[in-house]
Length: 288
Length: 109
View 1 (cartoon, rainbow over the protein chains, first blue to last red):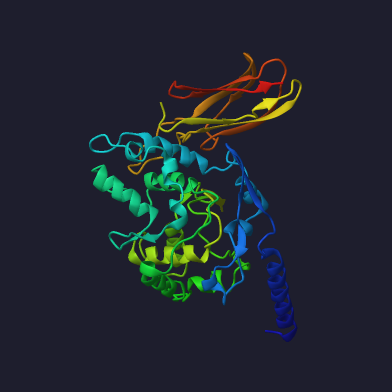
View 2: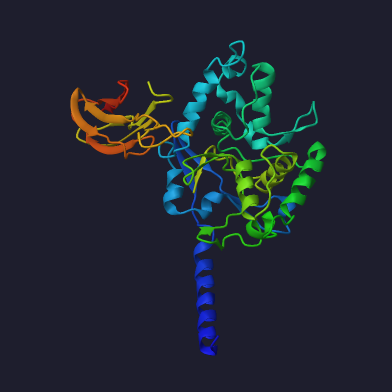
């Protein structure tokens, strides 16, 4: 290449990179949601949990990395398209759909009884010693108590129910346990987080830790927090679970992905959730 | 009746007479356009909400004709001048003949 042209190309590339960085920082903003029961303040920025102290100081919800219009959709429950699915799940909650006519409401009464669950899962079940996601608990009920075939982990019924259950903990701070019986799962999740996968040889950390706030193609790289999940994704016009997002990320590294509900993704969900300890559960958030 | 069709509306709880208030109305509905084919290649029959109306104190104030290009979960937002009645009735008409209704009352004071 001619020397002059080369110099021009370098300048252009540098210029683009710099302007990208300037735009892409987490936006300074705060989230108050207009709900049916008044205004609810959501913690979207806070100090990083102790186990991240040598990696980052502040953790941000993915909400800070989205455009103004997308952020605004989450400020009002009526504007949040995810609420349609919450309504749908409420019908499912009350419906006698078990083999002997059982319903969720039959045992658990109102969905309010699920308050707090989303903030502390995945967690290790004290009796079985298994790592349990909210999906696992739901399917436990569906199969054992209602006598049905298990719901698909990423099926509509399951994701609607995730949305409803998550809404009950909205505003509560994520606080998953990482010690005691959870420690081996957490370590396994951490291992996956820092392992490079796929033909592109990229780990979660390469994007969401090393390059957070920068552009990946036309989109901003967030910290990869999952406090907002399940999310209403504008691109899909539907609800997306955390493990579905993991599938998308690992696939983008050109790897054969783990399956939702695999031991690997459950451990990863615990680890990624723990990176957001201190951020608020957003119920159903809106992302693109 | 189409599956999962469910109206959601949002109006302020109270307003002053003469005040202009913002009204939001959404119905969850799949709005099948009639253009799509299923896995076997058969045309999926059209099933859309073809009309939306809003009555304020028994007087029609909004009447919308809706065509197949309108997306799923049609959402209307408009402003209304509150005069002597705060009773607002929303009606959606489905292709299959179903009619979905919701009524909200704004306290006028």
